[in-house]
Length: 378
Image (cartoon, rainbow, N blue to C red; front, side, top):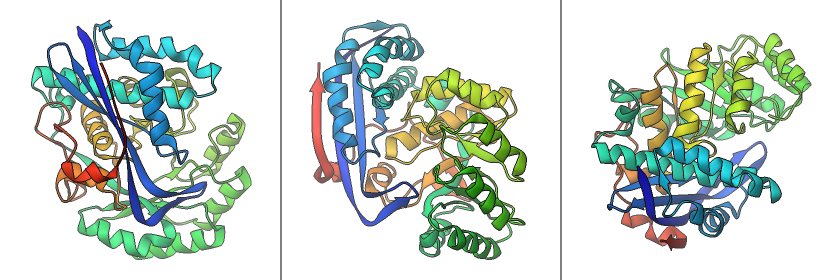
């Protein structure tokens, strides 16, 4: 049984030398919300709450946790992290709908769920992946992400130096330039390298087909979110029938039922839930198992701080399959500082920690100047 008696949360903002651009907006700093839970016996666990959008998202998520969620958690006995997740999800559903903030509530619950899984694994003295699956591997295949296509000439060589062999390019800015750059970058790849593209929901069906026509002949590993997630299923089916490359998505899907629909519709070959955005370990593990059972690939989405990527790696290792871990290669001390001077990537693989839980004991002291808000509820 788990009874949480204290919750701490920190909001951070790290200035960026270069803004991180997507087709729908630009991040001028890198935010993060990190959460620590402690039980009545002093056992603790760390989690991360997704907070990339809107611009004020980090501080908002912290206050939402503090003022509207924490009292539903503190002093309540839960049989397991999974029991916690489904009970809290049910308890907050009306509140989330009432204020039109289904996403923020889901993100707060996801961060708490990660923290409870971390706590549970620490209690057992096991890395989180081995709490999920006893024979989970020590490393998982990874790819370099967050590469705006116009910045690829700068970011890709750095990613190679860090040990990456797979790269995801952000497209959806200028069709002609994007197509031209994809061909150029493909022609410059080494024999053991590959690229994928992420449009971040930028296109209409006609534009997505135009992009596919433009890159005909490029062995693209996958094309991520070419259409808005809310587009009619018939449009997604039309694109899937037209495309010769695998379609991917999932970071903007919420809920077991909607993921089940997406998996069984047969449109997406690659399923990409985000552990800090919806579901935490509990929900994402259920989606991963469903995806693998239905011959889909599970690639955890992630673009945040160090705790969330550690959780994504542990879950990928525990879930199994041939999925790839998404590793942002833009400068972000809120991610990197948790692993020393660089992420544990070599020869295209992320090495998981041998420590208990997520292998993270605390927030690096160097991040203190980046803190914008803190709360403790007990």
